Image: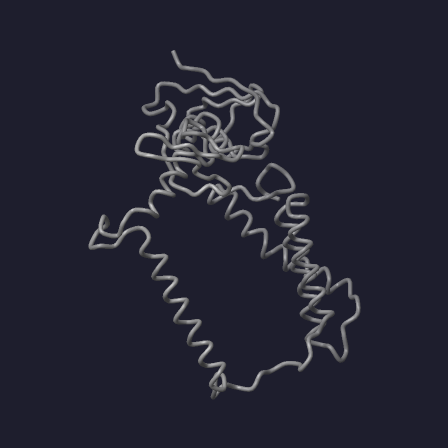
Length: 270
């Protein structure tokens, strides 16, 4: 008999694709969750759902795990990643005592995708591995030294150029001798509005607004002597161009790559 899992959809999975949400909830692989949905084993409030349908918070989710090979929880995987704020209080050959932040699990488990103490300890220990232990004498702490050395050389060259007269044989700078603060204000407003509104009005509308404001600033900067006035037709054309750029990008992520971006609705279209 097929095993049935039933539970309400948590608020944190609002608008998530069915296959992605099931994978996170039950610790399944994304492929296995998609197979379960394709087999008709996923229902939301009694309605059979497809893998690309969206989850609704508070709805009753039923998943029939069935007899598909490998349909059980995926084996936990330890991911070595540093955890900001975690420190090692004491360690010896047998015991490690750590002070960890809230929200960090002690070890990986099915369904958990966040940081773990075990992963943080592995990441911290990798830095201490001597180079002799690696292949051809190259250990995990080799690359940071290479990057640091390259940056040091680049910094020394920049200092030498500055003290010896700067970069020579370069074209004279173009543009105005003074900054155009009105255009800077329009561009700043575009970026700040996008950052403030993207989770409220969605990716497409916020990026469209960003495009409209940024184009207005660039157009004003290009015509400083005779700034263009407010023209509804031009504003509408800018908005349509911004939407024509942002909408395909949004659909590529939500529909083709199955990566969630902030949307105005949970359909993945807007």
